[in-house]
Structures are given as structure tokens and as C-alpha cells.
Amino acid sequence: MTNTFELEFEVRDYECDLQGIVNNARYLNYLEHTRHKFLLSKGIDFAKLHDEGIDLVVSRIEIDYKYSLTSGDKFIVRLNAHKEGFLRMIFEQEVVKLPEQKIAVKAKVIGVGLKNGRPIKIDSIPGFERF
Image 1 (cartoon, helix red, strand yellow):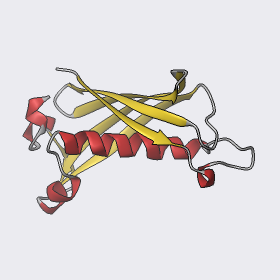
Image 2 (tube, one colour):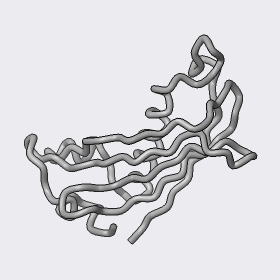
Image 3 (tube, helix red, strand yellow):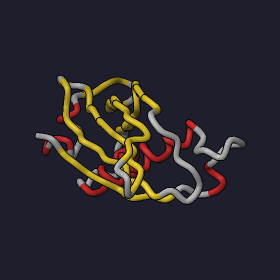
Image 4 (cartoon, helix red, strand yellow):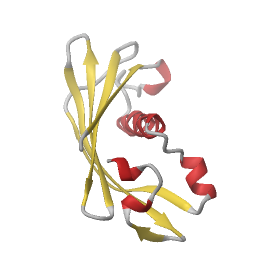
């Protein structure tokens, strides 16, 4: 099953570098915040899982920068999520400038669950069985 999610943002002045464009590392923050909000919308709480000894971590990110955002730009981060095999959760994400619908960033984020530092099946994590 594929899960689609969208979150809207606006670029803040302090997120830009000397060139007046969003610093490339800030896009990782946008992507991460959207993943967290998506998981919360599915009833999956990082803090609660951590208290139960389960940590959700990113194992790999592939990112393509297509267009630079600037201060005041409005944009959305789109997310599609699906499982891959027994251990990995795939988040395909894109940052899209509004209102033009211009793609600024495309990313593939691979996440795994760890219990006591060891990988666990994604279906054994509360909430992920619904994917």
C-alpha cells in the first residue's frame, strides 16, 4: 500500500546562505519534519517508540537538487511511503515551489528500525503493519 502525505512551508530568512538561496542542508530538515508529521498522522510516535527501546533511523538518503528556493518562497513537501523487503521503509519525497509547482528537490530516504542497536522487521514496529 502506498501512503501519500503533503505539508506546506515558507522559507525563512535565516535558512538562506550568502547567495540568498536556501542552504542545501536545510532541505534535509524539511524532508525530516515532513516524515515525522507523516508518521504522527499514522499514530507512530518517535518518543514513545524510543521509550519502548525501538529507534527509527535513516540509513540512506539520495537527493537531487533541481531548483533553489529563496526567502519567502512557499512550498510543499510531498511524501510517498512504502515498505521494501522486511527491514526497510522507503520515503520518496519532493520539495515543490508554490504556486508554480516547480520541483526544487527530489529525494529517496531509506529508514530502518533498530531495537538494542540491531535491525528489526519493519512490520514488528507498532503502526507499520498498516503499510
